[in-house]
Image 1 (cartoon, rainbow, N blue to C red):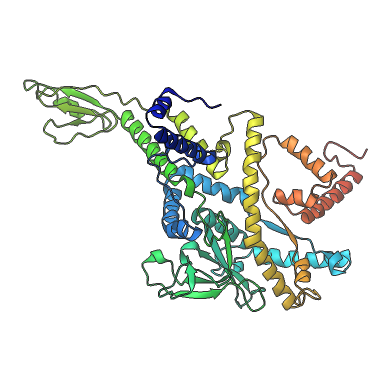
Image 2: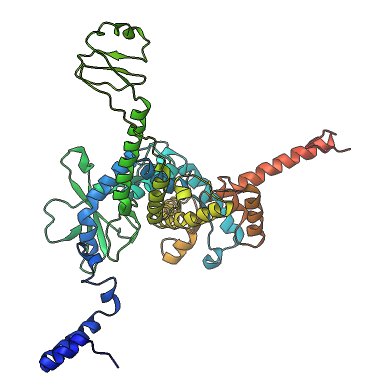
Length: 512
């Protein structure tokens, strides 16, 4: 039974009805203050007083703030080392020198022999390698396809999303007409006089909520030009995409992407300011000079000090400005005094404090501090765990890159090959599933860092022997082509056998 305190007993004697109402109110309050209402959703705890919060839909929360987020993210990239390093970590680990496709045609579904499929795969690989490694892959004819991958990843991380338009251009002496036009996020924007159409952030939806078009400015809005927007339908008459949109969604119904630095913009800004302030303080501490108080009677006695070398400067006593420089000797006027200043720089706690802030930043970015700072000063197990944890994030971004950018472009390239008769693919245009079977590919990029090469090689052997991977994939992860390696190995073995037959010692072994 619930105990009644003395105050309640007293009130009950004086006014039973008031006591009853008081007890009912207390019971209601206990009921209301249950679950989250007494914890994270509490409206009466002092800890939550002054906490301004609120949330709108993805369009209000993201699109209304996306311009500021982009500009601040780019500014941090250009001027804050940690921010710059974080964004470049994505580029280096997600695509590196480029994600390379390995054609794997589904011959069983297509009803063709494996030999015939291998023949088509070799043709696709040869044609794609030639195109991807030339600047003809770029609409500006500046970059290869692999450089475009790198640029797209960098732009996505910095701006939140990036767009690409596959175009067909007939160029003199060029084998393939396909070229890729990258569009920076800022150029996809609302047109003037939008009207009643549902266009936000340059992305147009129909009544059922499907993306039907993008509005692309002819110039970057930041170039101080009057821009005109072009409406590009998301899909063509055949159902293929006219424009590719690479983004990592975080809200249901989200139209535009958010820069990866968005959650840590304030932390990075303050960290950059603090680092610069510490650096400036350390520089000032390093050039702190000597102050000499001289009397009127000795005014001429210090004139010889001006004859010292360039690094020991004497400033005139009438100078209205104090100059700080290395080994500076500063004269003071009669009546002035010297106050010794100890800047205590560099700060002994600087590294520990900065490391703790970087750990918090790394948590939001899903990149451990060891990886973010490229500093492996922990144990082997700890460093290995950091690599594994970061690799989960990089693999997720790589899949996004493959799904939104690489694979659609690869399919456009194969479509051109089939249309031009360079490969025979029955049913390619009539059946969507057959088209997908011809376009299947594995995309292989840089592998995660190695702390112990011997252990990594043994692990690769086990992966291959247990059919978790293939020799070709292992070769591609190191940036090599398996077919070329096998061919070159064969040439080398033939050369070794030839030399051994002639009695020449090779590799410490002789024929005889």
